[in-house]
Length: 358
Image (cartoon, rainbow, N blue to C red; front, side):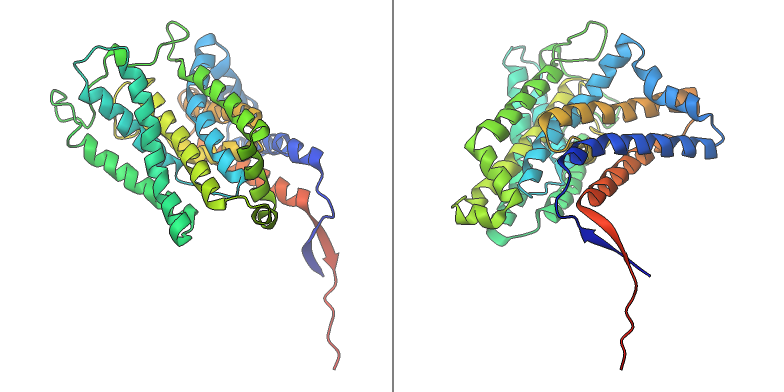
C-alpha cells in the first residue's frame, strides 16, 4: 500500500483562516498531555501559563509590552513573505536598530532635548534598514539566497553588539559590567499606564499596523507585492520591477525590526545590554504565519505569542516548570500550523504499488 499527497483542486479559503485556531487548539491539547507526562496537573499548568499572567491590569500591560516588538517585526516580515522575499534575519536587524538608537542616546548623554527620542527612533529604523540592505544588494546583484545571508548576518550583529557592550559602549562607572549607562528620561519612551512598563511604542505599533494594511490593500505597491508572490510570471509579463520590490520589502521589514530594537532600548530596558531580545526576531516569523500575513491577524497572533513568554516566566516561578516549555509551545504551534496548511492544500491518496510484469 502506497500513501502519497495529492494536490487538491481548490484549497478552502475558510480553512485557511480557521487553521490558526485549529493549530492553537491542537497545541493546547498536546501541551496538556505534555504536562501530564511531567507529573503536573494539566489544568493548573494551563491556568498558570495562560490565565494568571493576564488576570491583573499590570499583567495585561506587561503582555502588551512583550507583544509590541513581536507585532512590529511580524508586520514587516509579512510584507516580504507575501512577495516570497524571505527575510529571516530580523533578530540581527533588531539588534542593529538597538545599537544605532542607543548609540545616539549615549552620544548625546549630557544633552537634554525633546529631539533626542525622535532621533533615536529614526536611527533605529536606519540601523535595521542598513542591515537589511546587505542581503538586498546580494539578492539583486548576485541572486544570492536572502534566507542564508539575512540569517548569517544575525550572528554578525549579535557579535558586534557583544564587542561594543564590552568595549566602547560600556559604562565607565559600571564596575566592568557589560552594560551601557542608563538612559536619561529624555531618551525614554513615555509610559501609557502609570506604574507599568507599557509605553507609547505600543500605540505607534498599532498605527503602523494600520499603515501596513493600507499599503497592502489600497496602494499599487501592495498590489504588485501580492501579484509577485502569487504569480511571478504574470508579474513579469505586466512589467512589475521585481528588483525594486525586493528593495522595498527588505528595507521595510528591516526598518520595522530596527524600530522594534529602538523601542526595546528606549522602553523596558532603558540601556544597551548584551541581550536585547530573547528571540523576538525568530518568534515573529511564527507570528507572521499564524496571523496569515494579515496586519489584523498579526496583531492578534503577536499578543498570543507574547503570552507564551509571559506565561513561561510565570509558570517557571509558580510551578517550577522549565523555561524551555515556552520554546516547546512555540515549536508545537508552528508544527500544527504548517501541518494544517499542508492538509488544506493536499490530501492523502492511498493506492497499491503496481508490480511490473515481464
